[in-house]
Image 1: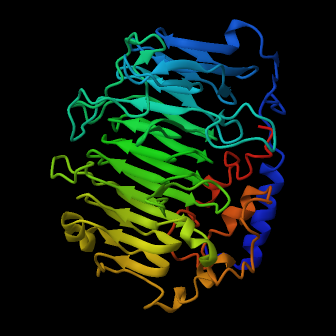
Image 2: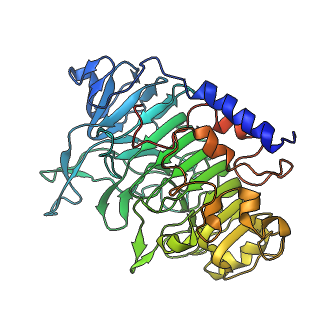
Image 3: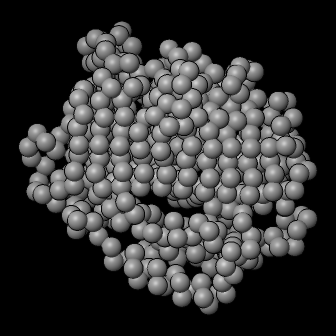
Length: 473
């Protein structure tokens, strides 16, 4: 592993931005009111209802999703690099056949069991799901979200219906689409989701029944997921309901609820993931208290011992909250609750009131073996419920993080001094490379966190966008 000096790193950042800052896809600038190929006219740019046979979306126009669009009948939806997808017309649905409440939804893409998505972007031509609104007028919930359903293992029946989706049209008639997930195929393959951004997503069908930025239901390990960013969503960024899918290079930026949420027996592996909170975005609450976390995990809603027990394996995460003056906006860097198991290591958690909460007996019992070799900073409690003993590095017992700023170079951890970056620390910056550089430990021999010498180039290759509010692509 290479040791960089600060000067060498600065030169590398400048050089990287000189390259990535000039990159454009084949469409050039993207205008949300008009596709690069012309205004939103013609049936080819509007998608409504079910996709029942294989179809390919290509750049050159902006695709609009009317209502909820389902890929069914074992079809494959291929999305080519540089394709832009946004919200179309809202369609009215009912949660139940006799419900008096009409829910109007648009911009939701669902890959049902047996179907596949091949969304294969590239670093300089990522696939983008985003709001149709103009600069300065973009907000969480403008877009719906993406849901992928598979046949991998969960600890719930295979008849379980994914949350957030209506099942009936405005007249109370069944939509006739199978939105269940899970099964007995751990290596199930739902396709590829690579170099993709999802911006301003989210929809609330009912209380605790929402569409996230990117939802996985029983997705198997045969599925490829990497280099995905979810920004400014109205609920969770990434949620995994069971399944065994592996993922890498995930970025959650300024989302309302949890950055990474696992339930119902998820047992996959994720390496290299960043969760960044923004005090100026929306934040979920429960009982008037923040419920916005870096990680949240449950075995299920009742805390049962049903198997397979939820046990995500997380390695090289960087989860950052905010300055102490605004820390009430967020809850915990890690919230392990309701009998979940866990494995998180080589990670950095900072900028929250609580670093890690272990909330039930089964979870507390697993904390010592599952929470290892992490750097944890907190304003109030480093740990709640348990104090893991296996190689934990905290500000209390390690000089290298006694002052988190010396390790992370993020000034907002020092009594809101914000000596390095502005508030919020990425809001006025255009160069993604500069932000990523500030997440890179000065000590290059350290392997903790998402941004290391080994992973640095993956983050700066051009697919990340920290300023979607003013972005033209």
